[in-house]
Image (cartoon, rainbow over the protein chains, first blue to last red):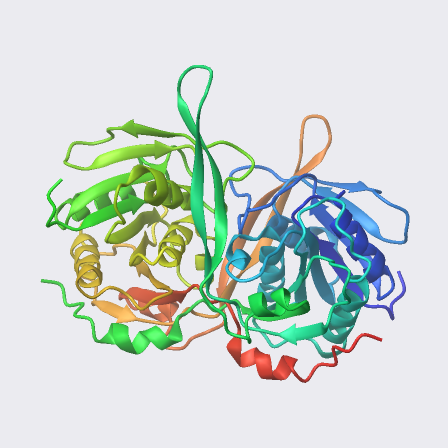
Length: 260
Length: 260
């Protein structure tokens, strides 16, 4: 590999063959030397899961044409980042990009997202990291209009880095025939999933459940990622690895925590 | 169940038979009506994982003596909270307690923790929620000195609730013959895991890896959870569900995100 080009690690949670990561690899090949280290199958909804009670495997593979080097891993997105940084790569990558996820990771979805946990893991490793998602679950999602925006965001992060302990959560509206309006820096909207469990009975008469639900946005602030996406902007939310609710500390100091 | 007593949901990530949850159930039986909805096996390191590509089962069981009602679930800690709140319980619980985890969830461990993700899920459901952990991985961990502190913290949260969008991450030092000094409200220390993958070769000659590593604390602030634990205090960190790095937004607005 050339020494002058940046080294870019590409991961995802939909699995190494997903169209989203294939698009991301093609874009990143224009910006640097690319290593793909991605799960061998879908890992959606894995959050920040890591594999501690099972072994991990990493096999060199070639999924598509191009100069990138690729490894398929038997673990979660976070496992992929850890294995790449500690075992596969011989130097620290200049940037980690995760995705492009098939489906939104805006608002509270960031907490459940394997795509974003790979980016958070990158931030913990002190590597500028970005998670990309498109608000379209289809395997046939159209990435054509998204690609120049993905490239621009990645290039700016390569140029300027990111503040320590933060990564970016980038969400891209589903293509709807109208050009995207641009990129908007946002905060995470205060929204939630209202679960609806689908209860069924198996052939032996035992009940079982499928988790479903609907997304409910309580927060109509124009500075939120949900507002940006609804208005055809690409949303960029900086995400922190410090989960302390600093604003709550003073109140808690007023609780009586003396044991009786 | 009595209508006057608070309804307390107990979950964990070590599995429904773990000593830690058995201690927590006994303590909560003194404070209210207890429902246990916990994984049927260990779920450590599952982060905020949810089960979306498989079915879930919930079986009523009786693991130990006492007035509590218990369900064993085939999913993750977050699945347990969602199933309990949406399917098993006929009213919203007054509090969710998770743990007592065998092993620390202080500092950055909160991100990987199934115990804490159950508490975060509770906060998302707008239910006051606490994750408890003891810094002792042993199944024979001694909870005797921890119990009055766990009870006091839970009672105060029942009395006063918690600020919206926050839950508590409570860590308890390993018992060392000296009484705990008390409870300290803290921020999450800036620390990380330095991974060391243990590389091995299977009988067929293929390489595989075990994830291991050592915890490194970069942050010696006396307001951190790590400092509190090292000094024999019980640490209480309020955790937020808003992951926005608000302090980074202004800087990002200075990046050039115009597409070429």
